[in-house]
Every structure is written in C-alpha cells, then in structure tokens.
Length: 476
Image 1 (spheres, rainbow, N blue to C red):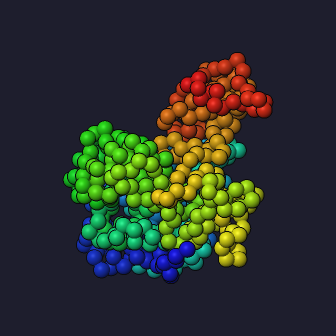
Image 2: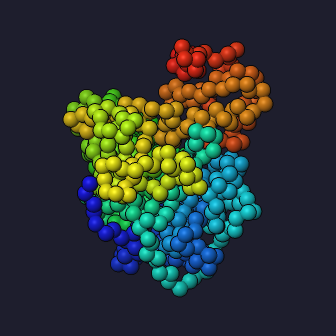
Image 3: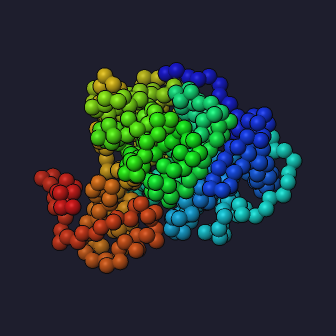
C-alpha cells in the first residue's frame, strides 16, 4: 500500500487558489458564473453564520438543496468550520428526509425551501448572508468525519456511512495523480449531490484551481444538451454511470479531448467498445461508499474484450477472500487502507459485521467486506456479481430488502419480492394493493419505486423452501 504522505484538506487547497487567483472562473451553472474570489466570499459569509450557530468539529450539518452554486458554497462552508456535511435530495419524499434527519442527529439544516422538520435549527440558503470577517479554515483531525452519505438498508432502514477527512484527501490526491490534474482542466458534474461520486466532481477541480461546470442531474438525461455543453465549455473530465454514457452515445457524442470516467454500475464490454474510440481516455472506476468513493481503477484499452475493475489507488489495499478471510483466486472483495469509513452512523452491530480486523495489515487495521464476488485476472480484478440482494439501479445502490420491507408494510400485501430486470425494478406481490406505487412514493426515493407490479397467487419456492428469485426474474 503506497501512501501519499500528509495531505492538506480540500478547504485548505481551495483557499489557496481563492487567494492566488481570485479572478479566475471557479464555477459555472447555466448563466451564473462565479470566480474563485466570489465563491470564497459566499463560503466565508455562510461559514460565519454556521460557526455562530454552533457548527464546528464534531457536529453534522445537513444540506437539503439542488445541485447549484449555493449547494457548493454550503458544502465548502461546512467543511471550513470543521463540521461534517450530510447531503439530502430535496426531491425525496418528506417522510424519508425526516427519517434521515432524525437518524443522523444533524445539528443544523441548510435548505433553499421550506424545512421538512422543525426539530432541527434551519439556515436558509436563499437568504442574503451579511459580509463577515475572514473565517479561518479549521484544520480537521484526519480521522474525523468529513461527510455522511445515506445508502439503502436491507432491513428497511437507510444507513449513514461516515467518511473521514483522511479518506477523502487520499482519494482526491490519488485521482489527481492518476489524471495529472491541472488548473486548465474543466470538469462537468452531472451526478446528484447525494451520489458520492459527485464529491470528486466538485472537490477535485476546486482544490486544483480548475473550472467546475454544474448540470442538474435531471438534465443529464438530455444527451444532446449535455454533448453541446461539453463542446461549448471545453470540458476535459466527466464522470457518469454506464447508463449515463449510453444517453450521450445515443445522442451521437464524440470528443477526443475528454477523459471519461465510468462507475457506479458494471461496465458492459459492448458499451466500453463503443465509448472508447469516442473519447481521449476511458477509466473504469470501482468503489463502495464505505471506502471513500473509488477504490480501484482500470484504463480501458481500445481493444478491450473483457472488463476489469483494475488495481487499487494509493493508500488502498484489496484482498479476494473466502469466509475465513483467506486469500483465494475467486471470492469476496475486501478493502483495506486509509480510505475506509469509520462505519455506519449509530449502527455498531452492523459496523462490526462489515468492518472486520485486517489479518494482512498493521495491528488495528480493518477490512471492509464489500459483498461483491470478484476474481483475479492478468488485467486486474474482475467483478462477477453480488453475493447478497444489493443491486445497482441507474447507479444508485439499492437493497431489495428495503423495498420489500416498505411493500410488506402496506395494507393488502401479504408477501412481496423485488427483482431487477435491466435498468428497471419489478415488484411481485401476493395480495392486493391497487395504489402500491403511489404509496411507496411517499416513503421511498423515485429510483426505489418499482416501475411494474406483478400480482401472484403464491411465491415460487426452490428445493430449499426459499423464494426462487431466479424463477421470478424469468417471469419479467
């Protein structure tokens, strides 16, 4: 494991560029353009309000806002105070937002709209914040939380992953080295702020003096619009899921200047072969939220006949293990190194189950058991499938058990199973609930609501007496 040494924080590096190149464009969103100096002023004004309200090391601040300059300023302002931030999607059902806020114990809520709860003090991002004396950036403890991302939970309860400053700084330094980042680069961010890959999109350009272009994730499905924006702004770097790249390819996209990064879902060989000749570089990235966004990388060649997730980034170790944590050629992928999260917020039992002592590293080290089945190849690691019922739906990590728990709680549903067919979620139910989808939409994000509901008299069982999910998938 190669460490990159002592690493400055995101907010420290952003501050240096704001001081040395204040007139350079930092951020573009539609017709709005902010220089590094203007963005730093917005960050400072909000950081002063946050500090006065009690934000600082050891506190968590929720940000419920669409991806915008206001969101970026809020994110940086929270980090400047030494607090950690929790991104919330304002399009999610209010019941889910309230659940996450209550579960997280957030001390403050930053929002552009009416707050979903009165239990947490609110600061409105759409208010004018008065000028303030410079707020010095707090130098964070590397082991302290930088952000919390909530992911789907198999028991029906979403879980918060607590990521550290050390992990974030190491990831950004490793990706910066891999991409040879410079202040001349232009990054396009299309992912939702609640999707952790957006952290790389936002932080890496702003800590290297580059330019960041924001595109609302809802507009990212408009392939021709995205392609035109890439050409107009001279975009050099962009991350998207394979589903996102398909949208661009359907629109006829081609740009030999672009470094394209794909992750969040398995990359199909056919898609890699179609996309690779249309861009300057194509990187396949792999990593769970529990290990600081990306863990391994693979440079996709022009003649790819199989897909690898590659080799680990600096500061990261990977092991292919069996149930006894013995190294094997094919088995579960276990991740170690400085990028690991501290665990799941307020969930010590679940943390102990997934984060285990590392028998290969230094005393006190840990491994995260990913639940991904992989095998070693000459090109690096090859992803095979999930060991459990966790799936990816258009890049979002979804526990089918959470959807099933929500369905089972509805009146009229005696039994339910959720499966994935292509990019779609399909629900099978025993019983009757005519308004099942609309009821689920009051508690689950849109990407977790099944697009199709199939009623059954009974669930098919396998020879062990368990529900035969493969038989259900064949019914779709």
